[in-house]
Image (cartoon, rainbow, N blue to C red):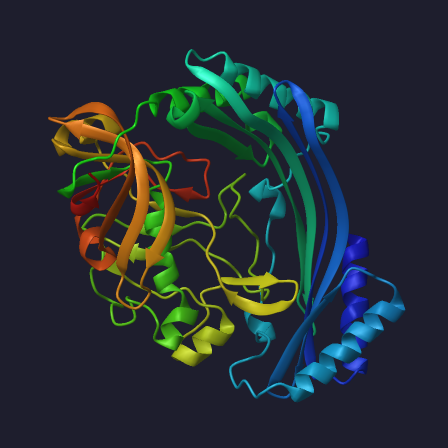
Length: 447
């Protein structure tokens, strides 16, 4: 981390010497390793290592960003000169600028976040064994005819952010993952499904055999799928995919969309958009969670906050620039890419859970659709009109009757999100902790 700090400092010095009034820099030093197997044999192995430097310079009210992977003085000097030249030709942006030094994050505790595994990295042989175990378990499920493959991977990234306003800090993140895709049936009757898990600490991963078995069971359960009935029915969004609904709300709450006026929530601040009793809360300090971080992409402190509280939308998701456009204060939600300026982003989010199990909600729904997979997406950001291709299971009188596919569900997010009923089956280790969601009265286009 000391080397990244020094590298960031060199880049900032060269930006100032090239004519920048201020600048910030993101440095990422990472390695990834992935192994894929199929039919018991190694199919693909990939390893990458890289160090990238992303520089943003500001010249007056103009800004530009560039990135390089060459960390020599000549490369950094050339990057800084080109970035300044680009900024001089860019249009004025009165909202661009670094954070006030008095508002910068201080005294964060990276160790408490437990973002990086303290054990040795899994080696290629170990990852291959995990993938083989997952695939073998899937193939052992009665009704599975073949595997589309299984994989295991790891990543380890050191991140450092520094700016001419005095901010400088970094942290390390690791991830280990296992996944499997299984196929049931033959010919035109083939169905496939998957299972996968990822954790910051490898020791937190469930056994690879469990992941493979789950993929196999899911694929077999889809055998013999038919089209569901066309009509208006209750729909239960399985926990596997329910977070996408909250994701649509978060996208509509993004300050960038609000400032452009291109959001169906632009006039909803302070109004109810979810049922009473439901809140959407971000917690960037959850240990071992993928969305945790000690500070945001502009060096500002992060904090636990409710975006939706007791059903009411209480704040937009903002970085500094969007907050200035909206006449508000940054919420500490800047994300940062290597070749782009900061933009609003959100990490760990949880929706209030309900008191009933998924099975109880299935029983309550009577006749309708239990959705376990979605494809495609048609979302009108201005109106909230929603349409997705789906597959899942048909339910009659509260009992699952069989798998369905080749159908579409449609509705309006502003309308049907006011009718969601959450189950209590959210997985707490995920970055998006969202349970299964029952929604009354969605349009299903099927047979």
